[in-house]
Structure formats: structure tokens, C-alpha cells
Image 1 (cartoon, rainbow, N blue to C red):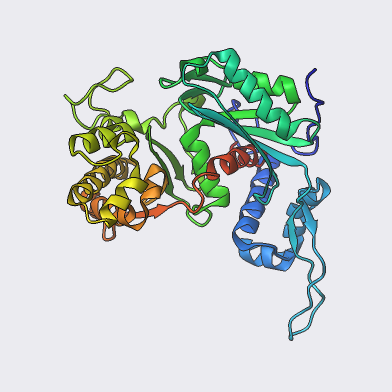
Image 2: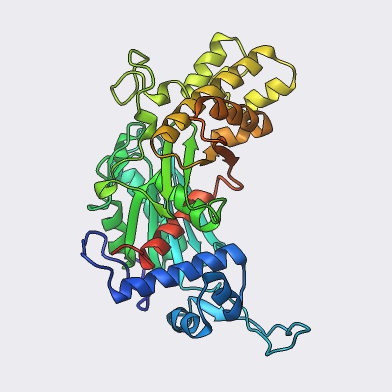
Length: 405
């Protein structure tokens, strides 16, 4: 029997496919409420007066914007705070309710699926994980998907569920189009499966874009309007944020930066093309190079292990780390030539390399990127393991409080 279905009635999702000529009054209201939520995530618990000052509006306007958020219990008032020495009424700071309704998040990877139930403030209250092999059938993957989502969502009041999926996705059908590493994911109707099971609106997007939403709502991108969220490891991908909005092609196209060609006659990529960025800047390439250099533990080496060898005085490891950083920087510099976000938030394997990798990567990005007076900034994510799940929550928030006409 499917778990009970309880969805949040007070918050409406934006139409994902509609094209309206003008921004409606309701869309303006949703956009303003989104700005309030983003401001709270940046400032922490804040009074109405503080929010009004930060957003540049008067108290009557902020009261109008806040009321639907209070009515839906998205925000709650805290205990009164004593006034300053200048006097005045005690302020009651506003913050997110931490006992539901919930934001559901799912990360569907080539090797595992993780689900989490998350509060509006980004606190993860429940999380479940299940692993599968890369030759797993669709039925085995669905069993794992149901196992972890039942553990997090069954009987809970959900605003919605946001899914980060590896591989190419079609946001209009809610399915995975293709995943080279795990063919059992191909064609998987993720949205239909979860909406049928939980009765909550479900959204799916490409993993790096959801990761970027995690950075935007809860991570290092909270105060940056333009940045790229970069996934590194067995695959490569960009989630691009421009003007505070995540860029995506029609029906979720784009973001497959790992398959941009950096060497016309290069190595054969698993996608069938030659010379993709992934052929020279992923863990597979790194381990092949490490084996050729006879480095210890080459078959499982990653940036953390490579940095450890560098610290131990290995010149071969130092040369390989520098080459890995250079090859990662090539893709970043190419993106900077086209979109110039100016800030790159790194996730995945590169982050495990610590200061040695960050400094080498920053040096190569500075060298290879176009000169505009100051180089692009490279940052390593604070919590790269959880930011994708938080991005699933951000996917729900971005749709509920859409700024799109």
C-alpha cells in the first residue's frame, strides 16, 4: 500500500511550461516573497523593520509581503527581543518554522539514492540512503527509491519534492533521458513515481543545476548573483546562476559541460565523442595517469590521496596534481569566455584536495581565463556532500516562489 498523501495546500507551484506576456500580480507577489526568504537565509532571524530596511520598502509593504508566509506557517514569530537603548517596541524576529510543512529532496546518482526531509531553514531532519550496482535494473533502482523516500516522506506534510538526477533529464516528462554509467536509470519516470506515491508536486533537474540551487539558497552563493557551481569527480558539470536565476535549456537541456570538446582528436569518451573535457579531468583520467607514474594506490586515487602524497614529498604526485588542476581550469576558463560568471563554487572530488588543490586551481584559472582587471574567484563548497540535497529543497522553493512570468 502506498504511504498516505498529504501535500501543502497553501503554497502554489508556478506553471513550469506556461509562457505569459506580462508578469501577473500573483507572480509579483511570489517574487517578493522569494526575496524575503532569500534575505532571511542571508541575514538570519530578522524583524519586520530589519527586513524592510534590507529590501528597501516601507513597513506597510513588508507587512503585505509577509502575511501569506505567516498564514501558511512558512514563517513564525520568535520571542520578543528587548529594544535598543534608543527605545521603541520590542521586536519579534521572524524565522522559518522547523516542524513542517517539509521540503522533500532526492539525489539520484549512478551508485545510490538519498532522500531527505528538510525544513525551510535548511535543517535536514531525516535522511535515508540506499546503494545499487551500476548494472542494476530499473526495478531494482525503483525499489531503492521507494525505500528511502518512504522512510522520509510517508505520512508527512510536503510542500513538494525536488530531485537531482545524474545524466540527462527531461523536466517536461519528469524522467531521466540517459545515464551512461548506470543504464537502468535510462527513461526512469521519477516524477510520476513520486507524485503517485506521495501526492506532492515533484520536480526534477540535472544534478549540477540542483547543486547550484543548493549554493544559491543555502551555501556560498547566497550573496552572489552570478556564479557557476562545478561538480567534479567521475563526471563534470556546471550549474550556472545568472542574475540570481539558474540557467537551463528547454525541458532541462544543457549543463553537460563535461562533454564540451577540449581536444579535437583526443581520447574516446563514453558518450561516443572524442576529446570531451571529461576525458582529461575526471577520476578515471587521474587514476590512469597515476598508474603510469607508478604512484601508490593509483586504482583508487582521488584528490585527497593525491594531496597526501604531495605532502609526503612526492614530486610525481605534485606534478600530477598541478596537471589535474590545469585540466579542470581549462573547462572553467572556457565557460568564463562565454558566460563570465566570475565566481566558481567547486564540489565533489576537487574539494577533497584541500588547500593544495584550491591554490593550484586558482592559479591556473587566473592564467587561462580572459583578463578583465581581476581573475575569476575559485571557492570550495563548505558542505559538498549535503548541498545537492539542499538544492532539492531549493528547487521546490524556487518553483513555489517563482519569479518567472
